[in-house]
Length: 239
Image 1 (tube, one colour):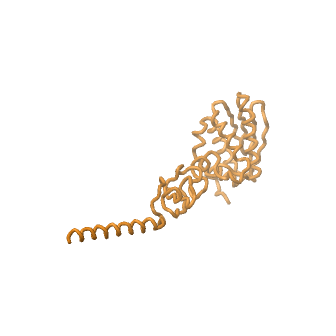
Image 2: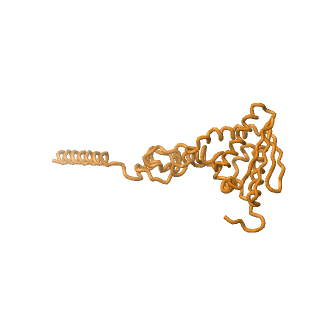
Image 3: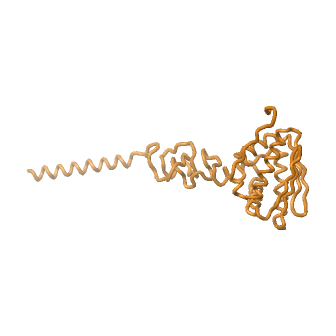
């Protein structure tokens, strides 16, 4: 009798365990359930590259991505936008998708930064702006330098900003209509006269000239910095 009761008890336990296993397997993954991702990616149902605001439907896994995705704050950064990695707070800032010359301009800029020791620069402060000479003895860099300066001039004229994460550059591009530039190629680089009739914009031009000299003197070390906007001299600036 005891043997039969023990046998029935074992069979009932096995049946209950089997049913419970089937229920667990049939239960779909819950929202925000743990997955296999590595950190806050939050790219929803997509394989994100960095933290974004959308909660994944499957929690922190390969597609839920609530954690730091494979590249952290890399290419797509927060909310799928260009984050503080390769293209976000990098050399040229955002806007690559809508800027046909972004890649070419960035490549020229990076090449010049990498070879900053081969470049020399002289700056003359003017009452209404600056006069600069930027040159190199390396014949391979001369056309790159000339092309870069001429491209930046076109961006000023067309109001196509770069480095918008840098306060100084962002402020300059708010006043492009008040900036006048004259560029002349030299055998080893470029001669530029940049002026304005607006006293505040003159301050911006001169501050920018000092930053460019920093690029020439320190390369990427200077390019990784953010530069403050100068305080207007005299009367408060009108927007």
